[in-house]
Length: 389
Image (cartoon, one colour):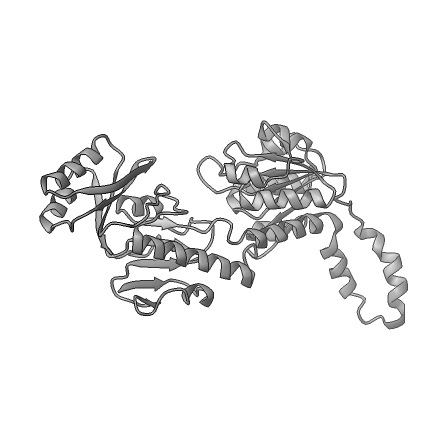
């Protein structure tokens, strides 16, 4: 029986996938084998030693202590693409809102609600103050071409925009889905210099923190507009407020309000609505649950942020799963122990990602506790687990 702890409200569409005869799911449960989480902050939580995996029903994993999990052999999953359509739709809306002053017009219209027969004349007199440019024919720079960035770029083309994309690490899958009409930017600076609009779709890390700052704003066109639905800290807040105030930038739409941004008239703050659709919550929950089940039942790793993608069809009676540091001769030491116990290996894979490696080893015979203890004792081995069919 696998025990799953939920740290947030998780969509029933995902939870109902857990077979009741083999899984126990609750928000309070002793010694869980896995944790399902959305936005709950796990940095201040003591994660039990029983936990084998954590699945985030969403793309961002800033709320999970990744280095500490890796050190303990805890596989952390996310659900890239599960909320992509929801965020893409909000990004398109943000482009429109940044241009057409829809919010300003709406706020003004509410002030004439009690004017009765005067309303039509007041509207005709007042509408000119809310004029804004069309998107058609303008250039959009998309920074980050993952699932959301690709979908945003493709939809912007359909709106008649010229689209440039910048992502030095674009995946093969993303490249296949990206329209050939999107122009490739060789440098971020080159994209910023030409774009009328810029939308960010990047993870937050040491390399991307404060990516857009005063130096980058100086490169951009006067009156350019920026959309940031990815992570607030991708943009230097003090610098963008200054650029908005002095007229260098026309608007900044962000999903990450702060007191300072809320006080800036040209900053349009949305209360983190990027993935706030029932469809996105369902999609992410279903992906997270399936990934947890695959890992717990067969050791398959897919969409992990700290361990390599690994899959091996489970045909043999016994499966050995080993998490270890990525150092030489680990596989040799493990297989030597198995050979010494007269245990025949039918198939195996060994994959690594940065400092860590993951092994799936199928055997014809069950592995006795003595051999498991020897493998666990190998210097560099972090976690050992055995599955049986």
